[in-house]
Image (cartoon, rainbow, N blue to C red):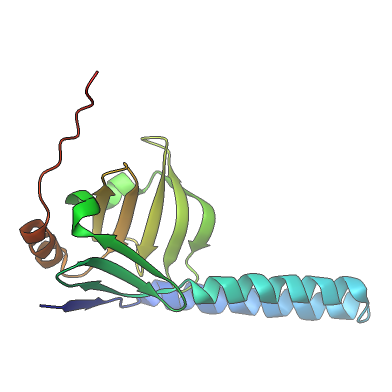
Length: 173
């Protein structure tokens, strides 16, 4: 049975996103006036529009749990984790996530998403969050970690634990 967990933006995310957009528009107008519409302002505006477009296409929308696995759906891309590939799933406290540094991702622009470096464990992690809290950590059999924010995190953990099988995580020497 398919269950959909939708992302809900908090007030802080909405305000931060509007602030980012106003900042980009203000810088673009200021640069266009300062350089009087030259190639530098056109280059800057084109680069910023391309980066904003890539960020908008990566905004997480929802998490779908069905009989095959977990699918994290963004606007233009989907990340699918089959249950055979999931080693563990657990709740994460907000305090544990405070040591994450964005490497290639968005912080506050319609959520938090992308690749982050966890400074406590020195691991690269994938984060798909609409707000900075109520995290669920999904670890696959290769050791990759995915953090998603979910309002009903006990429900999603219960559903996924019904399908995953324990894996042997010990290496044979």
